[in-house]
Each structure stands twice: as structure tokens, then as C-alpha cells.
Length: 257
Image (cartoon, rainbow, N blue to C red; front, side, top):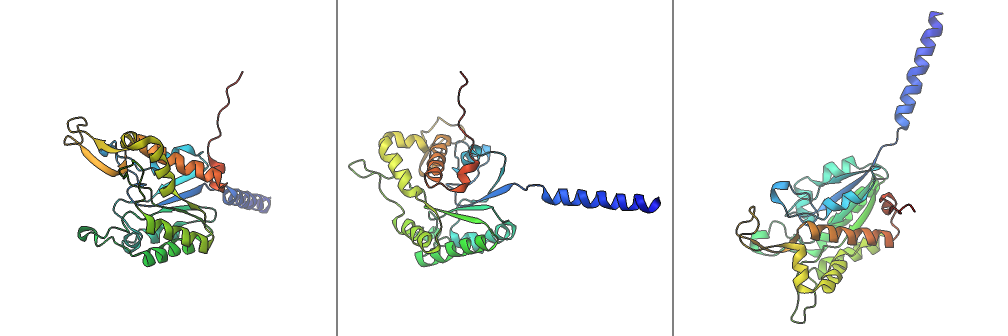
């Protein structure tokens, strides 16, 4: 009888262990990039990275790890050992969304530690993609979102031409989907025009916001409205390209009659 109960106990333990192993782990979406995508603490509001509202469009089946960081290029993201812990943690089925370029192209003397020539930029993107796939992850390339810059005819100007082209080249070579946020954001700015486009950015008049008493004239970083509009561009493009990640988005609710 004692032997019977011993076998029964062992069986229950094995069944429990098997059930535990079969529990579905959440798919993780890793986001790597710069200040236009990253998380911000409330004390810096209204500045908002587009990755913040982006995560709210998806069901609880996904876990978001937004590791984007302000001021980082592909080179410094690697040299500061920000990429290695992510590469080690990627599991099969995870997604890695990567958007760099703003800091890679910064040639000014004060930003020289960030600057990454286009050939090195392409090598770094290739590294991210290769190591993501090695762990069974799904890479998605995103071109750098446009800065606000209009010409005399009020036409939105391209501000990342070389680095956007490099993203396309790597995407084609490695068969990775490319979301052209550079183009999509400029199309949005053209629709809005210069004055209304300012409403998307950290453009604050002096004396209005107590956190920024001297105001802001920032043509790169978004406020809450701007970040949400940019996130929506990415979401719509994912749907248009039928990326599997779009399957995790909340479905539109239909009103009951």
C-alpha cells in the first residue's frame, strides 16, 4: 500500500511538472532604438516616445520590453552593453522592433561619440537581425521617424535620407520587413502643414508649462498627441503588410443594436 501511494505521489508530481511546462509564455516585444521611441518618466511630461502609446493597442498576450534609450545610436547601444542582455533573453516567437538613425547620423563634435557611418550602421543592424533570428525571434526594421522640417513651399523635407536607404538595403538583403516611418511621418506632416505639425512636437511657449517654464522649441521629440499619431502610423503599416504581430492588436468593438 505504501508503494502504491509512493507511485501515486510521483505521478502527480510528474503531471504537475508537465502542465507547468506546457503553460503558454507570453510573447515578448522587444523595442530598441532612441529617444523618439523610448519610455519617459511622468516628471518630463508631455514628452513621449511613440513606443509608449504603441504598447496600449495590444492584448495581454504580449509583454512589452521597451529598451530604447535617448541619445543612443546602433554603435553605442552595442558598446554600452544594452544589446547583449536583450539578445540573451530573446525566446522563440518574440519580436524585436528596431528604429535607429537619429544619433547614428549626428556628426557634430558634441555628438561624435554617437556617430556611426552608414557602413557600420548597416553592420550593426545586421548583427541585431542575425542574433534575433538565432534565438528564433522575429526582427522588424523601422526607418528613423522624420524630424519637423519644411521648405519654403511648406513641403516636409527628408531628414534621414542616407540612413533610411540603408535600412531598406538591409531589409531587402536579409528579407526583413521594413516599416518606412520616415516616409509615413513626412506624409502626415504634409497633410497637417507646418502650423498643425507643431502640435505633435515639444513646441511649448514660455510660461505655459510649469515643467518647462522657459518653453521648448524641439523639432525632434513628440508630445503625447504626436507620439500617439506616430504609433498609429506604425500600427496601420503593420496591418497593411500583414505582419503577424498585428494579430495581437485589440479588435474594433462593434456596437450592439
